[in-house]
Length: 400
Ligand code: HGY
Ligand code: MN
Ligand code: MN
Image 1 (spheres, rainbow, N blue to C red):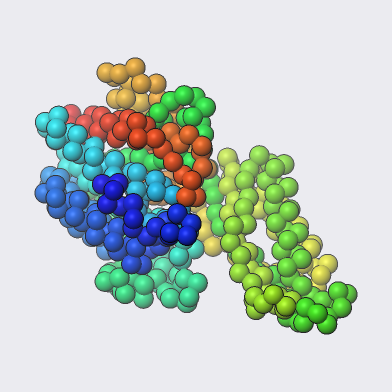
Image 2 (tube, protein in one colour):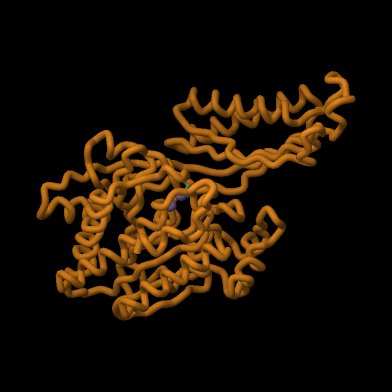
C-alpha cells in the first residue's frame, strides 16, 4: 500500500507532498482508496460531503466501529500524517481476517476529505460538514488562493457540491471512531514506547491579520514618508513569539501574502495568517488577545490599517474517557505493551467528531517529532506495532 501511495502528489523539488483537496493528486489518492476497498470486497461509498467509506457488514445496522484518517496533505507535507492511519486501517482489517475474527458489529474505514485545510484555509472540512460544525453557506464561501470556491473545486473533481451538509443519520450509525496517527511530537520517543493513546487536543485556531498601508517606490520614497505594512507585520511576528513563550503556548505565522509583491515596491497589503494553540482556552485567548493588541499598537504607530479575522477555531477536545480506557485495557490485555496516554497540539477529524460520537486516537512513535515536513518519519517496526495495536482495538470493539 505504501509503495502505491508514495509517488502520488510528491514534489521532486522538495520531496514533500502536495495533496490538496479536490486536486488531481487528491483524486489519485481517492482512486487508490476505492481500489483498496474493492480489492477487499468492502462496500464502497462516498457520502454527501465527499468523505469516502469502505464497509464490512451491514452499513445500516448501527453501532458501527469506524477507523481511518485522511489522505490530503499540507504544502510539502510528510508521507505519514493521514496516510498512516488509512493504510493501517486496511492492514488491520487484513490482520483480523487472517485471525478469522468474527465481527459482531459493522466495521468501516473512512478517508475524510480536506483535513489539512491547505487549500481553503479551514481544516477538517469533511468532518466539520458531516457534524454540522461548518454550515453549508459558510462552506460555499470558502475560496482558494486562485479564487476557486469549494463548490467549484468539488464539481471539477466530479462531486456534487449541492449535496454538502450535515449528515446526522450517518453519524448516528457509528458507535465508536478510532483514528491512528503518526505522533507529531517526541513524547513516545522520549518515553521509549511505540504506541500511545490520545487524551486531549489543545484548543486551536487560525486568524488572518490584514495590514494595509500605501504602495510606493522602493527607491524614491523617503523612509519617513512611508506607510509600510511589512514593518507592523514583522513586529507582530516577534510579538507572537513573545506572547506564546510567556504563556507556554505556541503561535506561528506560517503563511503570508503581499501586494503588490514586487521587490522594488513598498507593499500596500501584508496579509499574515496566525496559527495559535494552547493547553486551555483562557491561555489561548490571552495569547491571541496579546498578539492582536501589540499588532494594533504597531499598526497605529506606522499609520497602518489593521483587520483581524478569526477564520477557524476548534475548542479543546477531551477524548471519550470510557473508550480511551477500553483501548488501554485491550492493548494491555495479552501483551506487555505499555501504552502511555498523551495530549497533542495537532487537530484531527477525531477531535471534530468527538462532540458527536465516542472517539479515540492511537499515536505511532515519530523518532524526530518532525511533522508537516518532508522529514516526517516513523520506523517500519513502529508502524507495524501501530497496525497490530489498531487490529487489537478493532477486534476488541467490533468482535466481542
Ligand atoms: O494542523 C493540524 O493540527 C492538523 O495536523 N491538521
Ligand atoms: Mn496534519
Ligand atoms: Mn493528520
